[in-house]
Amino acid sequence: MITSITRGRYQVLVGDRPVIAVKARQLGRKAAIVGDRVRVVGDTSGAEGTLARIVDVEARRSVLRRTADDDDPYERPIVANADQLVIVTALADPPPRTGMIDRILVAGYDAGVAPLLCLTKADLASPDDLVAAYAPLDVPIVVLDPDAELAPLQDALQDRVSVLVGHSGVGKSTLVNRLIPDADRATGGVNEVTGRGRHTSTSAIALPLPGGGWVIDTPGVRSFGLSHVDPATIIAAFGDLAEIARDCPRGCDHRTGAPDCALDPAVAAGRVSAERVASFRRMISAEREP
Image (cartoon, rainbow, N blue to C red):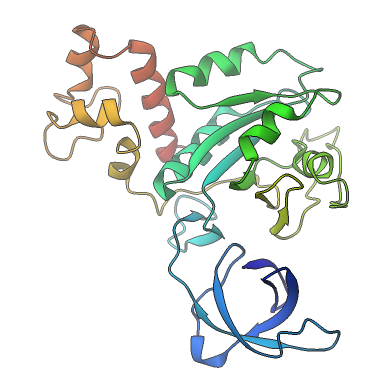
């Protein structure tokens, strides 16, 4: 498994042995990213000064992607083979951005990766509003403050490959250092003038959890483009809504005001809660908003 990439050098875990490798010329422009399972040849001893070659990238179970913005056609794969997307959001300093959360959720559902919302800095603000906003979507939520026990989050991460994504300055690296005391991830604060976090992680890195499983820490983001997302894939992640949407006219995007959308009569008939449909529509509308 590729655990990190630095200037064209790939750290690959072969068994329990870290090996440095380069990508073989035969792969051409085929991407290899953190989380990929790869075939490696050459010197795989891991001894200092040795270099192996990556000759094949196995089929991926999932790929989390984003684009620089919604007008950028170039997809940027972030992490491969994660099965859980942990959206880390501060409740204050910097304040939460529901638009960003919604956009990351959309990317996660598009990738087929299960979401988890992790709310940090609960000592600075109440989580009640954000919990209420995402409860109708059945997104699991963990609330933490600097002194809180990590057991609820550790249980959710156990034996899974979880990628941590969030706005700069929300405390991802601090969280990783608490989960893995020897991780030594750089941490930073928030600019008092702009209210924006400082980028401290500069590249993705996969780290083993002491109790089993992996976390993949990623650089903080200030935008999350979704030009690669097909809206039809998003509703498929919601079984009850997808069943209702079978009665929608062809090409229905299921957003508020969509002509003859089957979600509206389903709400009127009590087949699904108005709150769940409203939350779903707010989320998918993020795909069209900056």
